[in-house]
Length: 338
Image 1 (spheres, helix red, strand yellow):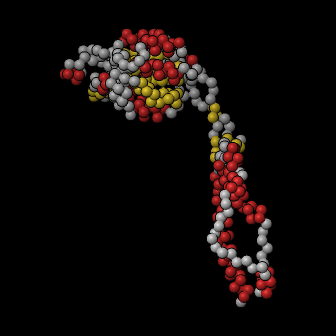
Image 2 (cartoon, rainbow, N blue to C red):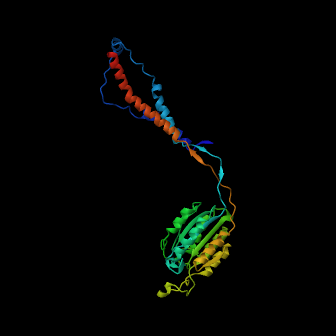
């Protein structure tokens, strides 16, 4: 199906005539010599004066060029048949804690001790990539909560933004309630059966303006399901942190995280190692996708290159005519004199 994306461009059609009417005539500054007996002189040399073309015929090529430029600017395109998008129906927001405690290296990956945030990047990145047909978004929270990536089908970009997250980028505290409140704001307009938030943290709420359980009640009213994940090794576990007197997992508020999940119909998961976090991702994969309204898209083939090329070609012909026609006339005149 043929279509003009911007047909309103043709409102500019009378612009050259309006400019000619509004602007003063150009003055070359050269003096002009008017010869009233030019016809007699040309008769004497044996040739007739060239008959001037009417004004409208002189302007015709420029009118064609202007119409072609307007047609190209209107973005002509050919739309193919509507094709359905592969949508399973889930809108999934991920809220990841990037507070200072997420930098503690009490987790292990391939035999090495790494920080909690690094482990989340390793395993949650694969989880994001595998969400084919789902819209995925990302919230980073510390002292405040920020929407890093809105809900989108571009999962690869969401994964990149997660991998680029650094500890402390949103502050050193943990505002769990604010993260939930931001998720409610972003999910409330989505279909009720597809509102899902996965919240990952390693601590207790000690920042922000909203209490986590109050935010969870607001989420429950909007029928938003929240799955919470508490990450970090158990208190007293062997790690390099014990050398500095730090007790792993001591700050995690599991009671609040369970309460958030219970109020919204979600589940609470405990991730003490890379194996447990990977198992949690597999369990989240088993969530039933919610049906959304079908989405269709049409493949559009741009056609503006054809009128644009035609306008360019006519312009070249006019320039060539203005450059070579006087020379040809002079050559012809010299030939007649000989």
